[in-house]
Image (cartoon, rainbow over all chains, first blue to last red):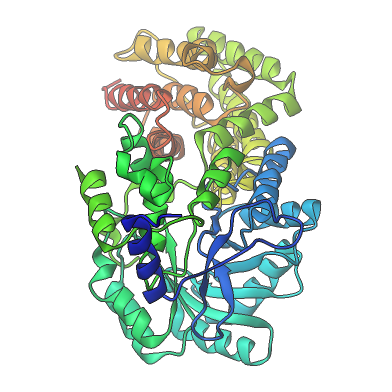
Length: 306
Length: 219
């Protein structure tokens, strides 16, 4: 088989980014191999595309909508996905995740990423325990301080919980470039495992300092709002996908954007939110196949910004 | 809130339009035929406001109080709270409005209404009529199912509009006490409907502007 230049470039780029591929869990071997990334603090590998739940999973007690979310989760896990991210701020999303995990028997397969979102440090543990119960899991894998709210009190609590084995990882989050200076300072000073930020072909401020710092400090990076809450994909919907997208196995704009994000060497996992099975399959396909090299990444920026 | 200027209304929207109207649909199905009771109460209020009688202020205040209390519990607390973290606060505000109507309107007799022929009176009456009769039609007119229609007495928006239009006719400065929560709700609702791209936002905003115009007319 003749290896095309784009493929060679992509493989070389991935090799330098510490990317490897892995098959989804047993029973789903028909799915394409997923690109996984190591969590620097432990080396544990997770697929490069996860599942966000902001807005999409806040459906209340509506059984029909809950079943639809459970189906999204089932398809996500079937495609090899692991990280599901939510927050107490997301209304009923935690309950809906718990419903989906129980219905699909998925609790053992997912990487649970939640947040603490309360200004009072004294109420942090209580909220985390409440979140765990809603997920219906033995312990949460990752707990992040949501938008740095009350981080001064919450971070010591989270580190203590990690030391006691009550959670596995500690993180901090922000979105849309807010409080990046505070984020940077915490990344330098505190032994956090994860940082969650906004990054996509349009919002690239984090490329300057946050992403390089994450690499230097060995901090895993979760990327939220990859599609700017759908704004990006909506604005591109009427435009034809460039022919070169096929060089990196993209058939949709969403995949092109996701591949741009997860091909950054500092990024661990992007978490697009969706309530549609077709979209979750489309998103998960972006975690497999060839990834863009530096030159193709520039072309993605140019075509999306155009 | 740090860097508050970087936030827009859509940043506070916690749910999709589909989820929002689905909650209204499930609520409508769960409470049917309470909508008919609400329409009956609306018709009664309209008739009472148009016909001067001795007890009309107390009766109108009592009927409105019942509607606000019902919405506080059945809609905001039981239903909307499933998807909105602000809903328990909205429930509390609606309950306070019901208490105000009972305390200042029914018990103290503070709802003394201007004549429908007074300045702005006709506009207020038309607004009440539109909120009761026309508002439910916004659902099918904007391409939604009938089951998502919002009707007076059980849904917050038409109830707040009809209440504000009625109470804009109250004599004296006390009307501003009665108007504060209904008008505040109109603002909150517009801040929700706007990011949802719901055309009803214009109905709410125009109604609010007209109520303010009526309320500031000299009796």
